[in-house]
Image (cartoon, rainbow, N blue to C red):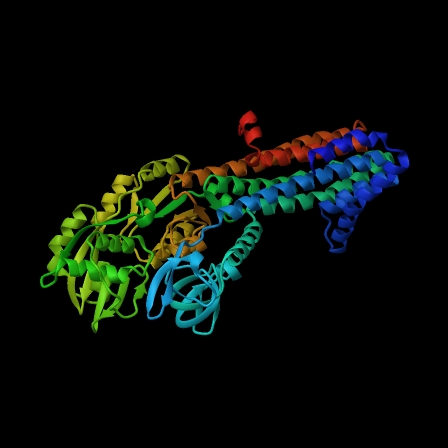
Amino acid sequence: MGLGRLLRYLLLRPLLPAPVRMATALLRATPFITQGLRSLARGRLSVDVLDAAAIGVSLLRRDFRSVGTITFLLAVGEALEAWTRKASREGLAASLALDVDTIWVRRGEAEVQVPLASLADGDVVVVRAGGAIPVDGVVVDGEALVNQASMTGEPLGVMRVAGAAVFAGTVVEEGTLGIRATGVGHETRLSRIVDFIERSEALKAGIQGKAERLADAVVPFSFALAASVWLLTRDPARAASVLLVDYSCAIRLATPLAILSAMREGASRGVLVKGGRFLEGLAAADAVVFDKTGTLTEARPRVTAVIPAEGFERDDVLRIAACLEEHFPHPVARAVVHKAEEQHLQHHEEHAEVEYVVAHGIASRLHGERVLVGSHHFVHEDEGVPVSTMDEAVATLSAQGHSVLYLAIGGRLAGVLGIEDPLRPEAPAVVTALRQSGVRRILMLTGDGERTAAAVAARLGIDEYRAQVLPADKAFVVQELKAQGHTVIMVGDGINDAPALSSADVGVTLRDGTDLAREVADVVLLHCDLTDLAVARELGRRTLARIRHGFISTMTLNTLFLAAGLAGLARPGVAAVLHNLTTVGVALNAMRPLLPAMERAGGDTA
């Protein structure tokens, strides 16, 4: 409802003849009465029934002024809610445009990287583990486990083989697919965004569900009190006043508005929250679990050393490692490829299909020999490759706080690569801020060895850490904390963090994390700044405080208005104005994140 319409109503209404005012009142009342009757037909004694009853009593009393006032203010409330939802949806949609810039496309026998914008129907796109499928299409070769939660809401992956249909925005968890594009461009992405926003609104916070149940529970008591007043006083005006002063409108309206407004505020500040219940989880959390690599670190690791084993050349070690790693989006893989580029080492796709083993490493075949790139656990313990010949070099790298990547060829250790991933400069301050906000336990999980893990944890000010952790172990740590009664936030950015992100009360990732991590996470930090985790937590806490403030205001003011109605001090028209102004006031308070001018003038006192 625009300002012009409001002014016309206020200025011109008193000048209208009585028959016109009556017809206008009936016209305005019809939708609200119809809505109340529909609610009754569904067996629900809801707020809509209460509004319809109040309007009906005023019509029977021929109190058209009260009818006009009631319907006008109800329309204002609906317009405010619709405007807030529209603003929130638009902001969330803009924030969700996390489009892939480049993709791998098959050109003849080779695979080349091209801009997504250049893709056309009929092109064959190659998507490997951890990558988002950028098109709607049909699988022409390969097989993979695909997470389709973005399309179906089903969290479990489904196997896709040649001939199966796949959709833009879904994520390959394991395997590799060649996909012939049948639908590309803006439409598929836009469809996903709209579906996501509709789902996010369905993820109600616990406090929102409680508010709606409380609002509906109050309705029978309002009817009972109005009936009692009429029986005792035989004054329909007093009974109508009681019906018009109910607690439920503000309670029911303010909570979703506060949550949607907070989600919109978060998006504008670089924090994408996928549902109201995650705001509540952020506020209630008393344990935070961090994955180290790419989360507490800058996600820009660099290769600091390439040490060949006896019988191998340094350049060969780096070239072969880069040749395998270039197919995967992990930060360490990018670092290895970048180091090879710096050294001007050229390579050709001479290896067979590359197999990605989550949280361990990658494997392939080169000139008939099995090639492994990965952790000590993968190369030595899983694959049985002896590594003791390089223990001294590994010890030196570990003492410097560097991670170690092993390369084995044909069952022999070919060399090791030292990987340094600097800590995010804001990470120690974030740990301190979380602890000051009431988080009792902060844990760091890493696949690094004990010595490296201890050094990093000490620099961050983290007391608890787990070294040499596998993906299943990460999820187990989260579940263990939840079993102890903690509300847990898990922060991670990689494919191997997905099980833990799904297990936590709130899973948090960064925008530059893998597509799978962004898919399963409940909160995405769009600025890739860990400081925004503290912002997200504070946003959740302020939102709950604002909702509680609205509850208290509603109960206090409406109790006073109800007493005035019972005493005959507030006639139905006055009661309607007072009640609906309270509702609008509580709604405006809930919407303060969307009203920066009000925020600047009044501050955040909730």
